[in-house]
Image 1 (cartoon, rainbow, N blue to C red):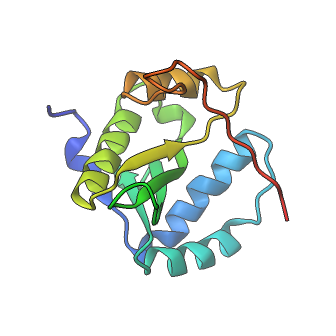
Image 2: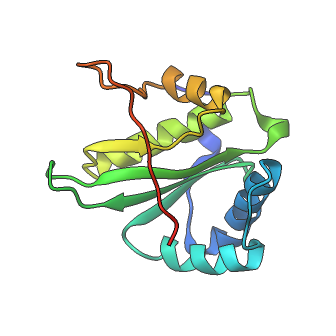
Length: 156
């Protein structure tokens, strides 16, 4: 299925780190979440994107949306598990399908990489994000038992 944004979706390169950093900084700023700043994020992203366990998908040129994914090995499957660490579309560009096109590109990349499962963490208050991911086939409950999934963390 083709989307109007399909031709403007691409996998990021380490040289895209500054633009991705700007988008991620804007994401945290929009939601009043602490951010280390664009320069620190760009440095980290340049290193991560050059390695085998992190990739990003960008939407539009210049990019107005990004998905950042990390891969990890998993004992329960042959392939890795992907964590959609961050997904952000500039507020002025939302509702036009670019987020869905980015997410579809992430799913396709994960399929090519032999990923067994994609995980996403969503804040309880973010009903819009939950609806978005559910529209794209993700579930917050076990399909067999109906048990809700929860995410726990501990800052070190």
